[in-house]
Image (tube, rainbow, N blue to C red; front, side, top):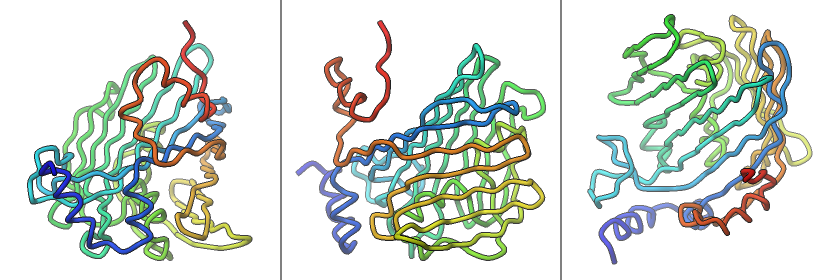
Length: 280
């Protein structure tokens, strides 16, 4: 057995079912119908959530590709959106790495976000070390500029999407201090800092709804997911002063080794997800 594979097997053996049985058998890929608010108007598009496990180095905070021992299995979420505003295109992607061992690791270790449109691009990265978040920001826009700042301890909104898939009971509730989602802060050119929010959970008809309300930002985020494991995300809604964005689950594929599906004939999988192929 290759060292990296042996390491992952030995580490994940400590985790009880159903997490190990479900999450260590390839990726879950879900496509969502997106109705994106931008510039005070709504625009059609699509979103993809790609959940997959991988070994992660706790010091360098990158994928463990060399079989090193200072590693922990993480659940990774690649969250992507694609939409157009008039003539030009928007693409966003957030990658967040949350250790499976929620008891040992109270937060994600890393989260990165990139936003591209025809005006320019921005990149934002969070790292959690020594009980504190640090942010790096690189942006085309002058006001955001290049920054590297310590932020302190607290919740990261983008990590909660992974927490709810692993154990919704660990989602924070009540009055909390939290860093808002990175796509939101970049779209509205908000400073990257902790904000006060009220978090709540409700259940009805097999669906759990997790809500975040940011009074000072006049923003509300609600995520609807299955109450039963594996807590499949069905829909989310974001309301801000500029409008309302919604995303609704359309297709979902399990146990997909997408990293091997890179040949032209593999585009059939995109059709299964309801994603349009690239026109010739």
